[in-house]
Structure formats: structure tokens, C-alpha cells
Image 1 (tube, one colour):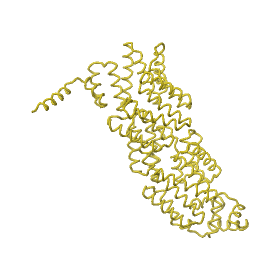
Image 2: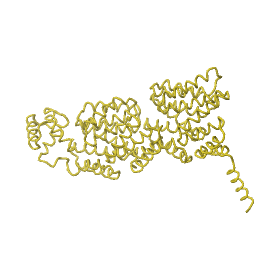
Image 3: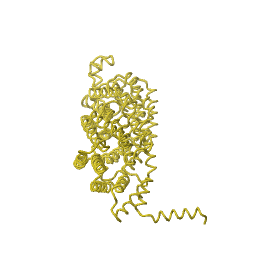
Image 4: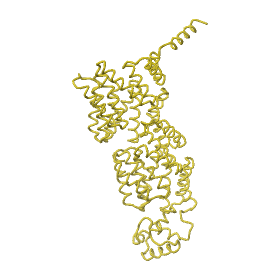
Length: 558
């Protein structure tokens, strides 16, 4: 055996013979969190660790998802620092206990620890811990709807971090300011601060426990403003960060949810479903209810789009047990199932509850679709106009695409096919730029209806065929049936006894138009309209205008 081999064996033997405390510290330095936790726990059983090593043990536990153990060890470190007379590190432990509980929704316990931290700081010289307590204040104000107050608190925290060279505090303060500015509508300034915080994270300047928190907060902000390109970039960065630390648990589930959302948008539904289901597994822990609920909601979304309605309903139900859902998925599921009244009740209640402009925009788009199915044109018009105002203010491609689609659908229902076609074509172009094939295909279906209303059957069939091809590639079974129902009927007329003119009258009746309006639209007399209606009622064995309208909607005539 040569000298180098002997040296390597000697080093390996030395590591094997090293006490657990040494191996735990080395593993912590190498970010091997699972090993660090095991070895430091072993060392603690041999002889109680000092507070500095207890901090390492607590952080290792939290990073591998052992939150209860981590919090218990952190409380021990707090007491150990107090016993030694070290108030400032004791305050920092109390802050992290309180802040972690605050994020987890344990308000009473969080308040107790944060109050203790504040009391212990009384009479102490200026220190970084005062900045950390400002983070908790900013968090509370932000979630109470006081974005301006939160912005002030986070800015003061970051300034204290700069003064004491606390990189973690600076990064957390910057991301807090960015979120508050976005909530106030100052998106450009807010995003710039979020990017600055992320630069510190990717450069390794921020401790792992706080780096993961900044990653997740920034991804949430990207979702709030529908910044898909930035979300893609930071999701990839978070994936690499998690891969470099295989033991990390808390942030992996969050990363998988965001990945599933992006995969769904870009049409990779199989991979999206797999990522969402993995997220539900990673987040199936006692203190991850809200995140796990978001993961189940995402599973429900993908299953709904694929036409697996019963499985989708189960996923939405599971989500509702874990957190209060603010998405329109369950209402859209009921619409797809033909339960229009139930969908209408759900979406109206949701619209009353959701006030933040980001989530509200998505709800408004679903609201337009559902109330149009209810033939409530006034409500659909009002919602489309509100969405248009939000889109104009934000000027984000995703919102512009949503708004144009909603406005085009309303115009089409109102009988203004040329204006509808212009809006829908704009929406389709934006969805193509965003590489969102499903949304683009849905708009092509609406474009086909606009062409058909303009008696342009050739273009209508072309759009329907293109939409069907996309739906087939995605596996959107319900949408495939919807398109084929029009394609097999040729002109979209029912395989029944109505003449072409009677079909025209029936379509206009379904939009809520009066006999006088129909007469003006078709340039015929009201008496002729009445005769056509009488023929329609007789041929189809229908008792009223309402029944005739329902017949038209059921057969995709409107």
C-alpha cells in the first residue's frame, strides 16, 4: 500500500473514530442536514449540547422537515442563552420561534414568543435583533392588508440589517418590501427588490433556512403578478438549490407546486400531474396544511382539464379540508358537469370574497364564462369590463389574454361577431406567445363560433379542426367532445326539422332578444318572427322561449 493510500485510510479511520459532536458540526458545514441532525442528536444524548450547537441541531431538524423537534431544540437554545446571560442570541431564538409559529398560523403562541423577545430587548443597545422583530411586524401588517405599513417595517428591518452586516436580515427585508410594493401596484419597483433579494440567495450569502423562505416568497409574488418568465427562471433555480441539498424537505413541495402550474400552462399535463401529486406527498405533514391544500387544488385543476371529473372533485374536496381555496376550479368543474346553477352560485360567492387583483382576475374570467351559460349578459359584461380595467392597469400578457377572451365571449353572446372576432384573435395571439396551448385552443373554439355567426363556415371548420387537434394532443376529453359536436353537425344546426331561418331565430331567442329585436336584426316583420317561433315550438315540442333557449345552448347553437 502506498503512502497516499495509507493517508486516505488514516483520514477515514479518524473520521469514523471522531465523536458525534465533531461529525455533526462537519456535516452541518457541508449542508448534509440529515447526517448533521443524526450526529448532533447522538451528541446531545451523550451530553447536553451548548446553545451554539443546539442552534445547528434546530436548523438541521427544520431543514429536513422535523419541525416539532426543531422548535423544541430552539426553545432549549433560548433558555441556554438566557442562563448564560446572553440576551441578544436568546432574543433571536425567541424571534424565530415566534415567526415560524406566525407563518404556520399559530397566532397565540407566536404572539407569546414575539412579546417575550420584545421585552428582553428593552433597555438593550441598538442591535440586529430589533430588525428581525420588525420583520414580524411587517408580516402581520402585510397579511392584515396594510401594505404601506408593511413596506415601512420591512424597509426599517433591511436598513438595520445593512448597518449590522446581517445578510439574512437584508434579504428578508428586501423581499418583504418587494411583496408590499407589488400589493400597492408598484410592480416594477417591487420586482426589482425581489430580484435583488434573489441575487443574494443564489450567491450563497443567505443561510439555507432563510434562502428557502425567500425562494418561496418570490415564487408566490410571481404567481400574484402572473410573471411567467420570472417564475420559470426562479423555479429552475429553486429546483437546483433543492437538488444540491437532497435532505431539504420544507421547500421541495412548494417548488413542485410551482413547477406543476408552469407545466400545466405549457401543455405538459402528464408531467404536471406527476409534479402536483409529488407535492401532495412532500407536504403531507401536520404543519403544511395550507401548502398541501394548494397541491391538492393543483391536482384537481389538471384532472378537471383532462375530463376526469370524479377524481377532480375528490382532489378539490381534499384541498378544501386543508385550506380556504380562492380559485374558481370547483365552480368550473360544476359547469363542465352541466350543473350550471351550482356553478353560478359558487362563482358569485367566490367573487364576493376575493379582493386581491391577481386572484380576482382569474375568478372574473371564470365568472364571465359561467354567467354567460346562465344567459346573464349584464353580469358578464360588468365582469369583463372590470377585468379589462385590471388588465389595462397591469399590462401583463397573461391578464391581457384573459381579458380579451372574456370581452370577446361577451361580444359574441351579444351578437356583435365582428368585434368579438377582433378581441378573440388578440387573445389567441397572446396565448400563443405565452406558449399556453390549451388556452389558445379554447379561444380558437370561440373564434370558430364567431366565424359561424358571420356565415364564414370554411374558417369556422378550420378553427374547430385546429382546436380539436390541440385538445387531442393534450388529452382534454371534455373539450374534444365539445368540438366534435359542432364538427359533426356541419353548420352547427341540430339534426332536426328546423329550417335555416328558424335556426337563426332560435339563436337570437337564446341571447334574450325580443321579437322586435329579432325582426330588426333579420330585417323581417315581427309577425314573421312570431310565425317562426310558433313553428319552432311545434317542431321541437317546446313549451316556451326559455325552453327554446335551453335547447339552443344544449346543442351549441349559441
